[in-house]
Image 1 (tube, rainbow over the protein chains, first blue to last red):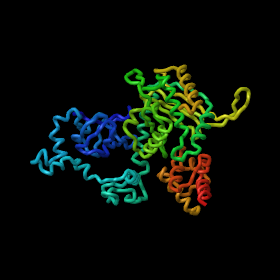
Image 2: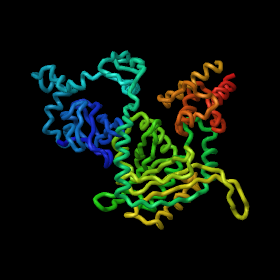
Image 3: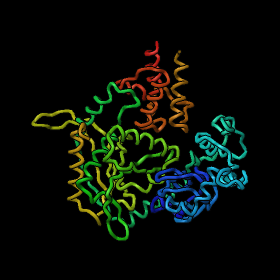
Image 4: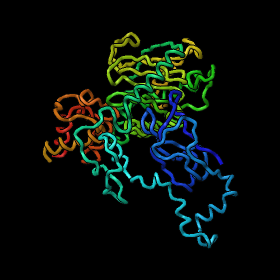
Length: 388
Length: 81
């Protein structure tokens, strides 16, 4: 038996509210399955499980707020199964193995009242209802199995201004404030800036995208993430977490990518195991992640994973950004706006595409000299875009 | 399909990507990225959606025309003509 607890989705998270269970009692779950949706200051987050087994008991119901680490459900591990064998066989074959078991036995496996009376609702409809401040319990669904769909949500003239897509921007601002204040209080930042030539990368990107259907096209951000990822394999002191007064380099490289939310707010969910993804796979992941970030539906591992953050404010028109490190990470790499500039190459003045890359790093862990080498390695990586 | 139909379709796809976008009173010549706070990912998603919905080929080289509502409508109109 093991207990599934409220996970910590970053050092600034203290509690979470269960929105819904996505599994039922008796369901088998395995590592990585999404089992619940939890509302936090960063929006509604899909919570993954890291155990394998069977859901035995729910310990909290939707709507309940509990602190990080509080028990949420009991999981019967695969190894525990012998003790539960009668339960399991009853569930699957009630009439044969246990003839005396009443048919109602199976009803014991339905979710608790709190969730069984919860209406079925599509994610889009839930978002609209939340935007418009409508209690979904008052709605009737017109979709399959009476699922509430977007069309069922009445249009209201006034809705709560700050509530959007399951995100409370006021709460999110507080979460950002807490994390950034801690960062500036605890982390002695140093900053480096370097101007690099990205003409080759741009040309490669254009050539690659030409002839591809829009859904298969790549964005420059993918090359930036990949270049940072490759450079980190050599410069490991920028990849990891500073915990309990010491730096722990991370075995894996999981790059957090800063996603700004329209109307304010920011999240930097992580792309798991970036080095093992091709640029195409990375693009797919990034697309999916940005879409979910803006809908307010990220996964728990995307918050706990990141070992460094990449921010690309460039397309919004600034030449360079000096980021604030997201604790307990120890570095942030910023990419600025691409500008066409005259450059002197072998005695000739040519028009080249340039951008600035910046590093904010934790001086407790690394020094400017290594930081400079790290930035030049990123530069080097971007000169061979086809190798990324 | 005339320009008005296309304008409605483009607006619908913008709203699918950015549900909170305020399209009333949008200047058709204004850069959508500035007016609606869209980024390159949003623009790519809008172009992908229009390509799939209308079956119109939108080469990378023409993607720049989609940064304004008028540019998008005119490109689609000439391709569908």
